Length: 273
Length: 323
View 1 (cartoon, chains in turn yellow, purple):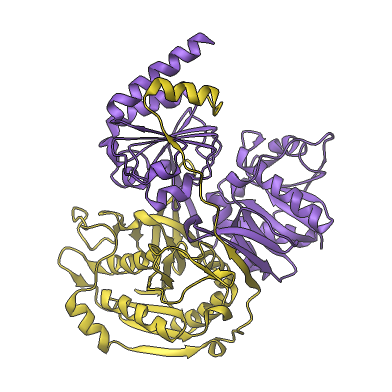
View 2 (view 1 turned 90 degrees about the horizontal axis):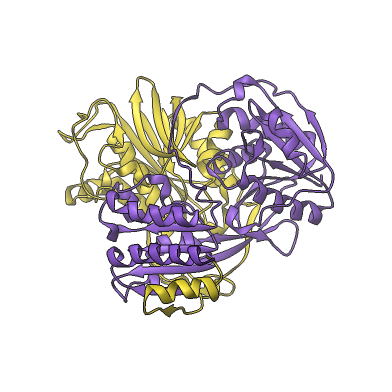
């Protein structure tokens, strides 16, 4: 099985947001692989390995793709160090992109690479748009399973547990398909590929960290570079950011001495009970 | 190209409360464009909800087919796209629910439309939208230059639309070719609850890691039932399996803005604050006075929940009895 994982680099979300000239100031920002995309790489690895014996399924391949400036090669290399096999870096400036441009480029790459499944994060934690996976599935005419909290391989299909309002919906999609992953996809038993024993529990919280061996191996793994025009995409976004503002801070509250005082204040001051 | 097509979810012959927020945005957008709101109901049993929907717009279109019983993005998105074209829609909108977020980008793809996700309000021009980014730590105004624009509206940012004085016109439209692209609905493991939906509730009672286990949430549920509240939780509590995952309030869970929010034994990680800081009144109960939750709380109680919550229940009962 061949899995394509598009990834995006994002500014480290633990940094405090600052504004400069009406936009987020990214001067000196440190960058990371978008958390949900990191989980997508982790999911691809769990689908294509025996987690217990730590061996990859013969003939399987994971191709990672990013669209971004020269610097973005660094985060792409991180995903190779996690265990992806090959990378494609489409070099473009962030301001040349929007979700439709990204989908156009990815569609072109998918036409050439012919993966069995595309797995990506449900959203990037900078723009929080949550669009690319669904748009891509639509553009390809493929089925989609978004917000995956669990995936089970069933022959040439996947049964995906999706966290929806009011419970978990199970949806079956045949390959080729687009799957977007949510937080709980990295839970210890969330991915069942029929190879890793059901009793095996993945440890830790989140995606695997690259091992030293993985980091060394990643240096030799192939990374092709391309440009937007190679896939017929124009650097002409139709979604443009006009400006960014920070919300006003919440007014300071009060520490209340005891519960009877709290109930009195809720009833008489805030008038909410 | 001036109408607004509002895709509305329904249940048991009525619009979902979440759909009324979508309609509130749709009316603003229609006013800005100089057009009308057209409500679109899709599904099996959609006809039953059409009379209820007609109270909110002058035109309601129903696409009803047994093959549409279970929502699938693959079958619904082409219907939304077709109806957008048939109704000269400048804007296609849905509430940012699990279904809205799943289907709308696929509709945008079919229409070649730019999309604004999870918006908080209409901007200073009809093609500008204000939306939270960076987990709600900033607000971005985006401008979209395609003839048709797709939008999902954040439920907590729009007051539910009120009924209009007269009922609108209901018509039906054919579903066209229904092709699920091989996708199948298997089942829904529903979390049954008599409590209000987390997204709609006027009061929310949430517990965090400090509750230690699921059994301990029972006392919070007692408080919730006393106040007619929905139950919520921090990511730490849902990840630990104490309570169902769909109770999670936060950037990656539900975004809520009730009148009253109780955060019990929740430290107040940025992730969680992003999901609840729009609440009108926030009460934090935590034994550690240095937790960040106290920086957003209107009222803070520095006590162990084991002592504070039972006392809170008894004091509220006393208050209710005195009224």
